[in-house]
Image (spheres, protein in one colour):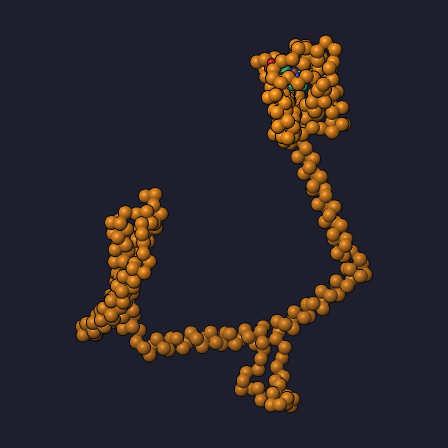
Length: 353
Ligand code: HEC
């Protein structure tokens, strides 16, 4: 049942069943009425003959149409259905359509016999004249207010331009009242912008909007700043590095010593790193830690921005060669590999010599 065409065909077939069911109940109801109304059996017979003859004529057309639609659009793979499945469903739907057509024709035939021509015409006339009078009333009240054609002679002006004459019709009410409203609005507008000066002109509006927008951007950027993580982190500025230094002195010196030369923890000033030496790596190490190796996670102690500052401070220690430095641990980390690929190419050629 994963095939869309199949599902669609089944749904169409089911819907048609519902249509057939409702049409046939309508037909049944009407047939009952006809039998009640019919004074003699002859009439019913005639109706059936008329209905079925018109049905026959339409029937052939319908069959032609079905044949046309299938031959006109060549279906190569039946939309993923098996050919038997496709044709079975197609036949079912075609048959159902035929039955619907049949029912509609029968209903039409019965309807005609139930509503003789004269009566139908009279009903039509009545509904249309009701519509007309309503429209005329509305038209007169709200739209054109034009004088009826019979009275046009009374309102004809004596203007005559090469045979083109002018009627003195009233202004369309909707237009006229719209115009009055603009006059009222204009008074308030004038007072607000020119007398009381409480409204903002274009320039003032622009400035207000720009100020609001700036406040929003600032708030957004401030929120985003707090959002740094190991993927987005970049080096902090000088002030950030100083702040990082203070934090480092407070909590990290116990194990990494005051100049980052290393103690319990590794030397943070050389080019060798156990967990990677990029700003992202260092940030990640501080954020998550390696608790089983003696380096805890600091994410509950410091905010992302503070971790960024500490990581930046550590990165700034590179190559400071403090006294009593601990021996390198981990792998040689090269910043060049990330910063500049042309330099890496040079390095490679040097190392292969
Ligand atoms: C209790 C001791 C201790 C404290 C306090 C401590 N660290 Fe560590 N740190 C370690 C140890 C041990 C390691 C080595 C972990 C390993 O071998 O995987 C380490 C590793 C690191 C590394 C990774 C070094 C590398 O070579 O990859 C960084 C970066 C680091 N610490 C930063 C900090 C910062 C920043 C602080 C303060 C917020 C801090 N540490 C506080 C013990 C500590």
